[in-house]
Length: 199
Image (tube, rainbow, N blue to C red; front, side, top):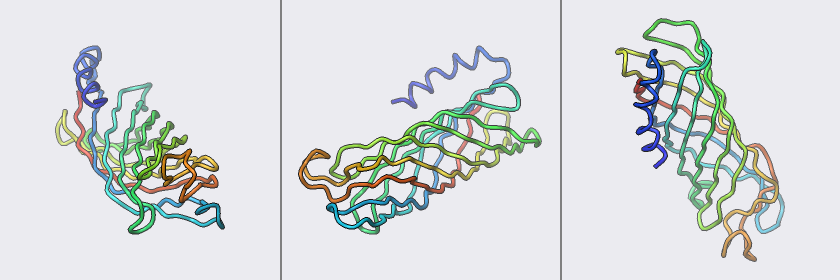
């Protein structure tokens, strides 16, 4: 729904600018890694690994003071906790910016940094929320003025709250929780490819 609202607003935003610098990039990617330190049924602490999986989302960029751009970044990943374990959904929404390096009109290197939050939704449990960030870089290629290709790699980080309850029967306030996190920094790596639509 948010993507549809943004798409509806973009033509009006583009008319207010003479440089046509607004860029919407739907992308698909692959996300690797991520471990959570936790205790299973209050027993000894151990690490639980998130499985690698496909992900998708969009980036919305608009010009700031040269050579920078603002960026709104959304990413969704469906994964599971350890191989064959319960499913986990991660939804990331962040705001930040890109720094454009020296390149040609058709190939532009960039660095990106964003800050915001992530919603973590384990299977059969309430959602948990964490402060999150991304750091990365890549290239934008523009074979035409309006259409381009964006290739990038990012590191994603999330600050998991101590004693968050995951995989609980009857919700996080229920009597039985399979995992209670002990608090740590969740780090993942991501590679994305998308089509840039420039307005």
